[in-house]
Length: 220
Image 1 (cartoon, rainbow, N blue to C red):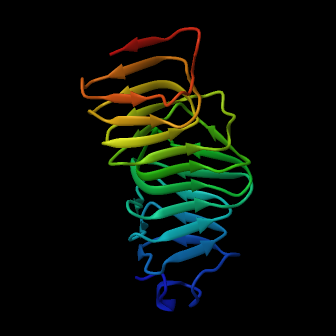
Image 2: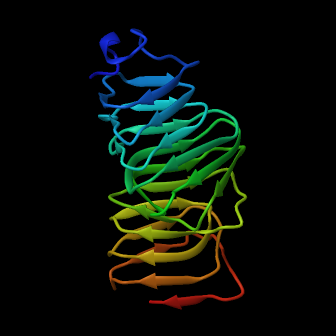
């Protein structure tokens, strides 16, 4: 059913900012912005953002077996300390880590996060991981880190689109899968490997620095 329809919900009312929402069937977000406290998509649940925005200020859990169609839409974590868990490969339009405190990304087993538009870590936010994930930038998607990466686990950045702005970051590996152009907007670190799989790939440093770890390679 549609998110805006009272018949979709067991309470007979549309969820609001104070509600913990559990989705056990197919739901389509048909309003520009939905604001809830907690969100769980169960193993029988299906949530489609349809190009709209879901704001969550508590925990967000997409369980194993659930279906979450986030491409083209926006997920905004806007509370204090929060954990975002998902059990499969999810393609995000915009993933905005806002509010305050630490945002922990828990990827269960697959450890891959696909981004079509923007992954943003807002000012004052700490980002942490429970494992070593891969962040894949598709299309013309961008990465903005204006917060702090506090996790001892580092991520790998995979560039798989056309043109990408990258601001900040502390990476294990960086990989160019296509003839993409990366515009570096600030200093960042990497500890492992930089690999380019296309001779057409371009990395514009724009006067910024790359801090190298103790064990690194550059394979162009």
